Image (cartoon, rainbow, N blue to C red; front, side, top):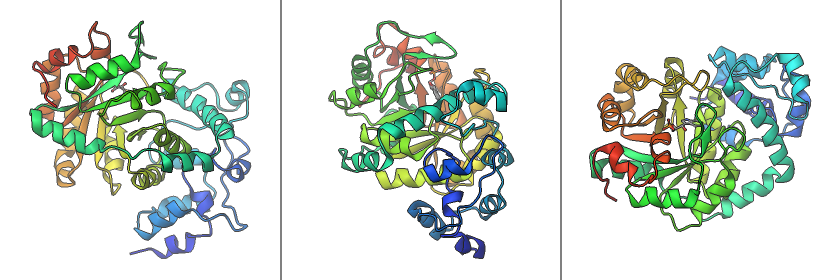
Length: 380
Ligand SMILES: O=P(O)(O)OC[C@@H](O)[C@@H](O)c1c[nH]c2ccccc12
């Protein structure tokens, strides 16, 4: 049943209630005067937001969240009330110095990445406006079934389906592979039984690129591709689809519930799979309360501290395995997997897929490394 509040909110404050991405609309940016700024509903006939309307229709808008907006609670306040520690600066045109004067230094690497991403997305939007990127996304060759490929590979091989990551570097490990040829690596992964590929597109911290994504997509590789990004704005999802991504990562440590619902809906419209990444109990609980989630990744690495612990997957699945199975959600074990024992450990914990970068990409022959990781050859 649609609550009175939700229906009243349709058309009155939707523009203001749109996800926490405080960059996308110039009208929104204008409502923020700084990090402590309060988001005010746009009273003068805000443009209709079809995604939010669809969410309201399906009773997927959280009335409480809308009330917070109505009361002028800041974007960071809403995030904090959901246990999210990563703040937004919402000042894409300010210098880092000005931002730090107001907010202090970023509290951890993930927050730093997000602060840079806010600026990067604003620049991307200025170069390629949303409307154009949306049109390009709709015109792109159809997406491939990322979720279906994982499900089928798990059934076929009896070991977790492999999402093999094309990863040159990371902030925690530095450069993983000097002679990095993304297409060669992608082809080797596919030939050796990877179900899907993960392509890092963040340049600053992971030395990835959208050029790599496009190159792999047009190289003849057939595996579905996930664009591994730090998504904070819908523009990034349309952009990823326009460059050939079939799936996208959404990180619960960064996104509010409404962000996740909103982005999931866009993925659905574009025929993309969303991999929702969680790291702790609170994030898992939040994500399990969102309808339409089909794929959850449990990251064994904290993006705030870089500590890696595969026991994280076990702990979260011991607690939530039943409800995950009930909902038919598929779980991906992410990060820090090096040996057949590691893979067996997360499989026993309940994952149907694994996401692996470092242990493959660091080997001389990343394709052959797959059989080493699983203790057997994977079949296509
Ligand atoms: O290289 P590893 O430890 O096998 O991890 C791969 C993947 O899980 C990791 O790259 C990752 C998981 N979630 C992320 C979010 C952003 C960037 C990177 C990631």
